[in-house]
Image 1 (cartoon, rainbow, N blue to C red):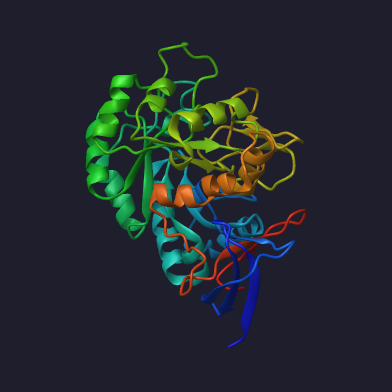
Image 2: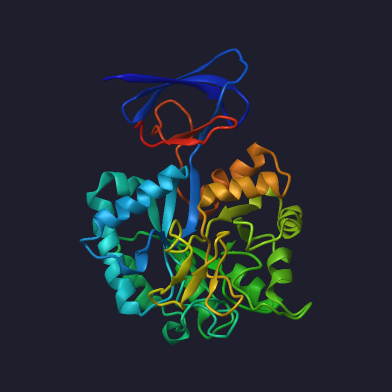
Length: 373
């Protein structure tokens, strides 16, 4: 078996020589630090990625493996080594079919089953109210239904890792308690609960905020809005969209000061048309959206955001260039943190682990080494 050698600086600052044999890191040896060594970093992790290149996870069938490989290639080019395939709002039978298809494909295709760490059930159980539902089509929004959700998860082969819910809607708090007890993470998003309801949701097991300060109406009350409650409850980790359009740098810096670096994680919120040319696009189960030449995606005729154009590597750039964080801090918020918070198995650069990592050279495009390839 051919061995490959990589020399560089790990996230903790150590200079090492990695030996890769096939798909495994077979050796890690510390070496003296040298000038111009690249960084060797864990893969980026994206817990909210809706698709790419016109392909939506909502619409997958058992014949969709080729489409998934196209998304996978796009993700890997952007240094994403673990991702949750995100279900947005559409008719529930379609989601059930997609869940069954994805579960089968991930079980049968080793490459896809490694890259796709599971499913994020974002849509459907959200606020039906205008603004707070974002670009999700209102006709498919429904109250949380634990039995129906459990059936979908069963169809997927129990691959749902995280489910999003609006805690203020009828039945949501009981739903959160049941889902949390089953071992699935619960995130709060596309919602406008009061602070008391947020704390009750955390009492019942909610532990994440899907995309802090987004999935909201453009105009809100200065005090009676969910953002204060999200910041106030230490049990809730904050997801933050770092494409440069969703959040201003000062919002991110303030959120991180409140929660601490370890309790914040970045998400791409990539639209199914991410990677496509500027123009008007139709979304299955969502409102029509427009990609502007600068990468800003919004609902057609409105200022409501409709996901993002960029992948998770843009979040690293945003944190470093606009927010002033170090590479180490930015990378953790886009890799180690989301993996830990969402319960995703991320291979670290240690002997015996899967050889999936990023080679990051200054002034060069970072490259993902995926399972030793």
